[in-house]
Image (cartoon, rainbow, N blue to C red; front, side, top):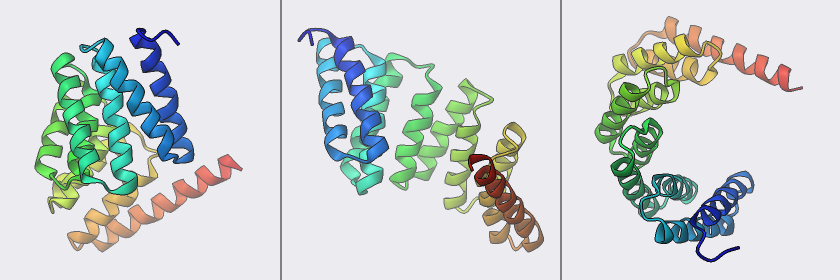
Length: 194
């Protein structure tokens, strides 16, 4: 590889991150971060390198519950957003890092921005629903899961999570209906896979 080719380091970082995700190999995540570091050193305004290094740090933090990795991910998402302010995915992923840090209000704020930038983003609605749930704002969580289901009616997790929120509100009939629907969709997904 050419030692001064930022794009080559970036692309190899993508490959290592994917390998690390697929086989949960710490070494591949470390190699990905190393390549992203080099890509950023060679091309400091590469928002995508910051974004993908942030994804890698967030994945590392999630896998080993390392606070420092979430903080590094947030820092990289901050830089990616500074360089590319209209990147809805950067807000959504920074929101996830805040969520894993149990900073639910900050997560909700980022999901709001992700939804503003990309209104049909069912992932941002889903993630904001999670943050509302853990913030004990069950009615808002239900509204977000309703939107996820409107955008993606086959999303079993949205039904399940909405059922959990209904249960917290003492709406057991609605909760059971959602749990049943989630099971039905999961069984359908398993049947299709077989």
